[in-house]
Amino acid sequence: MTKIIGIPSNGTKLSDNLSQHFGHCKFFLGVEISDSNKPKKVFELDNSNHSGCMQTVLDMKEKNVTDMIVSGIGGRPFAAMLQAGINIYHGINDSINENLKLLLDGKLTPLGGPSCEEHHNSNHNHQCRNS
Image (cartoon, rainbow, N blue to C red):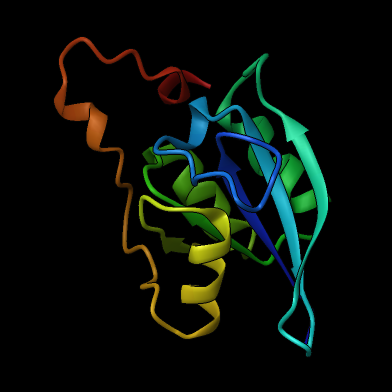
């Protein structure tokens, strides 16, 4: 069964690191995993003009993303991803390749709720709350 994994990233390569914040990443990458379990990048979306997390959810749905690997995500995009039928996994602070390997090995846990750690910082401006 083919899956398309959506990943907020700091760059456009699979060797780049998973972004620590869903809405403020530089890029969203889509990686196809087929029966051979060999990752193949199928899209990259520039997120430099971040227009709101809900647009990202629509983009992921349009690109047939089945699963997301994230580090931090706010409540609205989290709920919208689940409503769109996209599974969300908690990634680690490492490369996209390493996160994909862990997902394929069953070592990433499903995310049970929003996990934006930066919300604890009172100076944090989280644009996704109102988008």
